[in-house]
Image (cartoon, rainbow, N blue to C red):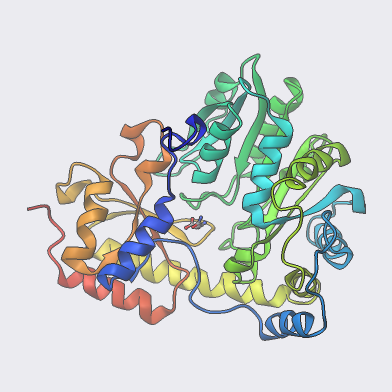
Length: 386
Ligand code: GLN
């Protein structure tokens, strides 16, 4: 009896869930999976409670609750000067469903998808599930900059779209205007759609996030994805959205109608409130995260690791080759036992294993005392392979 379809081969579970389970099992400080240990704005939480109490508990429209759609339109206009109408935004079950909907709705079996490596794991899973082929372009340490020649070389006759992520998980790189202009020129030259995952749009540390859709000629070929999870510290709410040209948004909606149809009835109006009235929350969050980044990076550096400081997201990458493990997976599997700390081996996000072999990702979206405890435990342990 076949117990799973070929389309799932090799993509069984996510490293994040696996490492969080390991943290719970071993009582470790979890600097692995990226979720904050503090809640979003009180008023937003209260708005969700009020929506539950107020009877907003049945299916919202598949397209999204009008308040949320309007709030996304207002957000894109206020922050980025983008001009959208209601046919140009669709609400999704987190950015995850928007990514799935984009790949299912826009890519055919055998098509190629150009993707930045290290990649977010759901891209690989969905590219495989649609029967497409991934063409990674590697961001290399120390700077994790995008090499536009490598991007150009990855584009072929079969390329259907470029899937971009900035601010970038796991490296924390924020694409510069020059890099984005290079992407835009190639997309226009080859008449490609670009899907950009911007879930960390508000979490940068002094480096501005530039949506690709704001570049000349790009609004008409860019599908922008984001969600409330990171900006408002509600990762479990899974309220996301995709925006861009109506036909691209309709393609996402065409697929998402058959994934969830709709979700988060009482959460959508609460996220609308967050988007409309709580810019102050993510501004303060980015400030706090900047300080936490500095503390975590300084602590890891003091341990002798090579640290790559991120410009955005809530992840820092280190090179752990000096500890003598065969790779980052072996290091991360040993770490709970020797230090009581969990981190993520970045090599699982690479096709080019050599590039990622010794890279480990540490999350700093945790309370300061949790980060300090993690660093104290690391400092007290002998991290070398025995
Ligand atoms: N995006 C989060 C991370 O990178 C985790 C999301 C998930 O668990 N799928 O850690």
